[in-house]
Image (cartoon, rainbow over all chains, first blue to last red; front, side, top):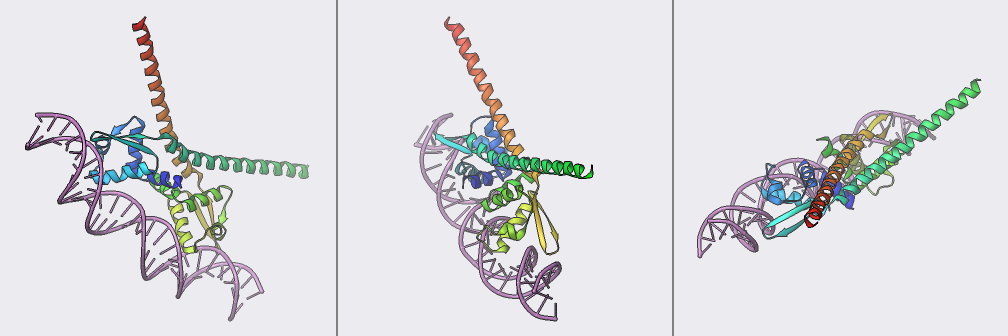
Length: 111
Length: 111
DNA sequence: ATAATAGTTAACCAGATGGCAAACTGTTTG
DNA sequence: CAAACAGTTTGCCATCTGGTTAACTATTAT
């Protein structure tokens, strides 16, 4: 499931920070790794998780690998969440409507 | 990090299905577990992941435990994603602006 | 050609995850 | 009280995660 992979990739602060950095524009591995207190092998694992989730794409030219964000994957994850919120809102609206209707009926019964 | 927990909880299809079901309204554990091909102990683990992530809340009354969704946690996750998309859009706009400005200057140089 | 750079692979490790079956607790229901 | 029901705990297991160090490859730079 692509959503599984996207949400899993986003569940790690290092990986979210990488996505956030790449939003500002493409960057090579070394520059991306710099802010983090871990070795390159560990960091590469994070990059692979991001890449196999579709959240980023990478391309090697010469000895550097350039990484960039793939916004569509982010949008898919966002879509799932906003759909849930939409459903929630719809239900809330129905509840409000129900309560108001019932109150009106009660008023009629009272009057 | 709360976002870690929320995204992690959402990275499993069983747990997303539970959230989606609870959006329609609260339900007891047994009813929630029914659609899934796994034992109750395994299902309970999923529920605990959801609860400790803040995505759902549960309350036991008598021998049944009622679960409900906590929409705020979903909204937090959604916020992170929409903020990223906003930043992406802002960068894209700046790029478009830059290119258009440059093209205008080139036109002036050509003319 | 040597050396520095950028990234990669391999082997290993502790701890978390996602499943199982079996035994158990507490709460209705008959 | 006995039985059914809803959930819980325990112990077990295979696999995945996120990190390490050490050794290695391929590409610039001197």
